[in-house]
Every structure is written in C-alpha cells, then in structure tokens.
Length: 240
Image 1: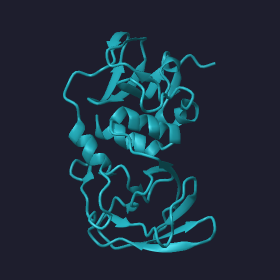
Image 2 (image 1 turned 135 degrees about the horizontal axis):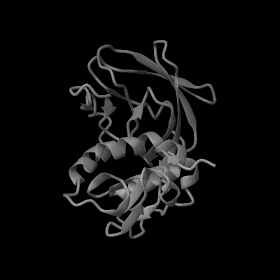
Image 3 (image 1 turned 45 degrees about the vertical axis):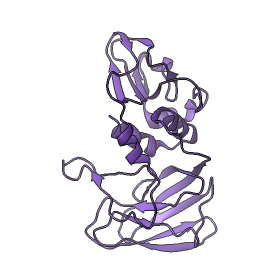
C-alpha cells in the first residue's frame, strides 16, 4: 500500500458519491481535490463547515470551494477551512449564467492574453476538444465552444443511433448553437463531436440537473455526483 494517496479531481470522482452531501445541507465548503497522507480523510465531495479546523500532515494539500472562492490548504498543522475575504458572487454568476443561445456568439476567453491555456468563460458550454460527462440543466439551450477563432470550421455531431448534424462556427467566434430541434439532448446519452482536422473526436455524455444550484459549494457537489470533471475543474479554477 502506498504511504501517500493522491486524490485528484478526476481520480476521486468514482468514489466520491458516497462522501457527497447533496445540495440543501448546511455546509459552507466542499472538497474538490486532495493529496498527501491525509487525503483519505478529505475525499472529493466531502463538505466542511467554514469555521471548522482541519489537521494536516507534511505533504498534505486540500482544495476547498465555497462562497469566497477556491482555497488551497497545505502544510502540517491546524487550518481553518473557510477563507477570509469577499464572496465571489459576480464571478460565479457570470460563469454560470444561462444565456440566450441566440445572443452568445463571441464570448470572452480566459488565458488568451496571459499566455496560459484558453478556457471557456461559461460553465455550460460544451468544449469540442474535450471528452467526458457534461452537465446541463433541464431545458437549457446548449452551445458548443472552441478555443480558436481564426477560421470558420464545421463540426459533425453524431449519436449512437447513427444520426448526425453539422454545426458551423463563424470566423472570430468561440461559440455556436447546438440545434436541439434537429438533435435533442437526452440525459445519459452520448454524442461524438468531430472536427474538420486530424484531432481525435470528442465523446460527450450529457447529465441533466433538474435545477441549477445557486452557490458554488452546492454546484460543485452536483457536478461531482454526476461525474462532470471538466466543469468542476473550470469552476474551481475560475473562483481561485
């Protein structure tokens, strides 16, 4: 048995459901990643009170997400879970806004001016470059997102029934609409998104949330419970 357990976001999702406290419970922070000797005490999805003190050992790192944002706690000793600072409500509201699909065309991207990786600015857009489970809310307009804007590519979206549709991006735009009338999105259904180049196709499985949680910790818990790893990573990074 390894002396150090490493619970990254992706690796821990499979075992997190037993530790997840579902939205509606009275807790202020949720663990979104942990590693080190004490990682087993802080599985992804575990909820902690903001006023709670946790004891860590040398080599431990615990990342928690709450109304004040994402906080990385590390180092041996006792640590207060909750961060001291203003709540990041505006950032959370912008990231999770369910916009009119007809309006969202260009959308800002994070990282394009800093040299870092480009990421989508809306949690609910489907990244055409990434496979995995994608959470959406019931009745939501669905959009595709791409990191590049220097061309006008057409993607093909297909499902298990061998149905397909073509989705075009306008030059200069990072997002485009998914035609729900042509290809409805169903809970648990998988879709292949193939671009015009040589990059491998993305395989996306949708998970439908009945409602959208209105705070970071409950949304993180819902994403963990559904296995929406990419969105959990985006949420944690945006609120850092």
